[in-house]
Length: 121
Length: 107
Image (cartoon, rainbow over all chains, first blue to last red; front, side):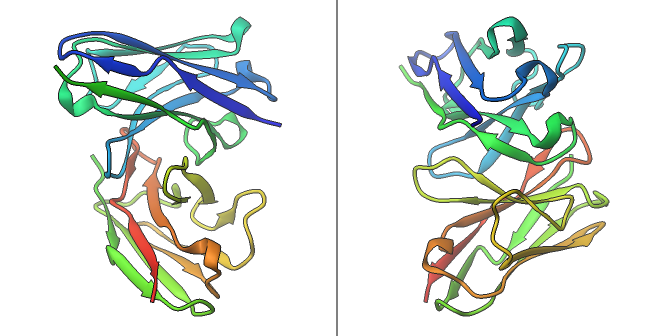
């Protein structure tokens, strides 16, 4: 069974940094593009970033470009999101999500339960 | 970026009735569109991708249609577990973008 579990969320001050992690199991992690999607409290979904299976390509939302870095360690079945220069508007539940068949341009069929990041002084 | 507009924002429906949700893209996204269901405190669940393909395990009462800029999610006969928020997402262009959601509530 496919499982994704995020970790690393918490309370951080504006301008601070945080690293989120996502552990995958039950599938061949190294064959799948992976994604981060976030949801601010009471708001809708916002795609944040994607990384291809071999890390050859990465993609970012304009709202996080230059501040966030997506990476992965296939040997550890792990996905990461390094977040710098955090702002109040980055406060959200962050989900990692796997696409159908591992493709880059497709729906996201497995999601973790999410980890909450709160940016506040 | 491609703006996804969902309507209505809230849909009040009685159990057993049909629900029709709309999603409009600001430019063509071909059939590169997905629908998700989200319940409070839960992660989204994929219902439909490639505009009309049901994801694994999704009941047949959920169907998707459309292409280009106009898309529809239809729930043929609402069950109690279907009351939730529904999002559309285009993945044809970067950045991938989601609609603002339609809340389906009990009438």
